Image (cartoon, rainbow, N blue to C red):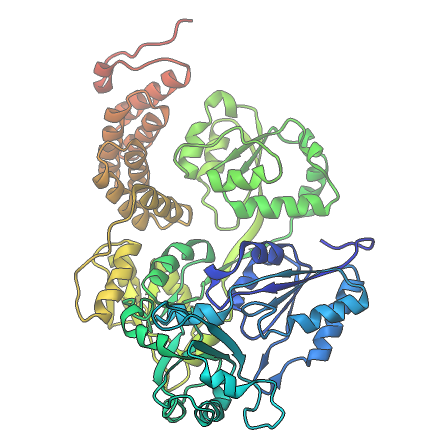
Length: 638
């Protein structure tokens, strides 16, 4: 974002109260554009994942009397980086102008002549009580609300706070950062005339799954806090609105509130399960077990890249990772898109196509079902013969597509761009939290996630919860047993909904009920994701549920047939393919898939007949309904 001639700017941005989905759109946008991120103790570290590659992240947290950087050092840091032409986003918990010293930092920037922008945020003073079931105003008991700093010593003689006036106010009083001075605050309010029976509530880590709340009165709240060992960060609510908490406490009533759950899926896959668990109130630690490791291209590949259109007719991508890494190499050589010339582009699915669209590139070939098998079928013999293909992919990619192109007369260069290895980085701090705080549950959705987690050997410290294991399906359970796990739960159905429900029902002391089923699109998305990473058994289960939900769903039957084919369950694959052909007899890809399944099942005549139908359709012909069982199809007029 920065360059030698660009003027620097500082953005004082509110990072919200803690929940990631309460961050404003403007703040999220700025995080993705920043050269430098300066963030504090109360910022959710997960938002750092929105930063662009290469952005510098500087922790400037202050917790109580422990300061990573002093305020003067933070001020100077903002000025220095902006004067160097960088775009600096100063992330401050809540709102930068609500007890966040944002006004002081803005004054420093003005005196230094630095352009700045203030981005308001959702303050914890309102959000934390809301998540604890406390409205800060209510027409029956609170027509005013007052925000008060809890850092000031209430016993000092020259206080900036009018304690006598504050004690007499009938509305809601909210103290920020006042846990360590709570006894003095309560005592001063009562000394100035406040009723000792006035309700009080404290909310710690409000709006997050780590939220804790406790209640009392001005007379006893300090003793309650000490007895519970209640620590900052927390806000304190004083007033009659606290009584509404028993009726309005929606968040802490969620079925998995207070339960910490580890997800071991890859970052790409984790979001679906994470959303389901968070909707139930769980504290989710996302600890992926696999990461992408870029591999450098050789000199021969780099030379061809410089004159790409002279060497290739087609460029094929089967993952977004391949697109990213290919064009990283491409642009690092100082090349531009014109080097590609008239080369055609093929992708395995819409996520990969979207990556190319970001480079203003249009895809020429993309299958209806997002697998490499169907992509291979999409190419006719005429499209392949004597054509030159560049196929960048990962080290562990299956050879099917490249082999198919070669068998049909194509010339294929395979460029290995990356490998997958066990994940060792802890971007969000989830791994550190797990080791320090433990967890109540850990989920495994596939054999590979279980194997990679086991290889990491992560064990929390003593005296914190050790997680119970939950497996999604019998295949993963078998792997867990081989790894030495004996006592674990298995979801009755191999879906993310069932997995989440298993945890929910175990916490509630019951087993068996299932969260409402996934939609057709969700089932297909999960199935295609499982296909893409080679988890064929899981993919088949998702596709099976899709066709049970909609028996006339062509894409579901076709995808199920391909997954069963990959599992070497050829007769079942043929049955699924026949059902797809009944739904659409003139679908080229259905007949191509059937041909593959027949051939693998050693039914040569049927394989040839199905292949012939696929070719007729690709030439523009039509299959008569009665020809599905072997009659002569219509051919296009010559």
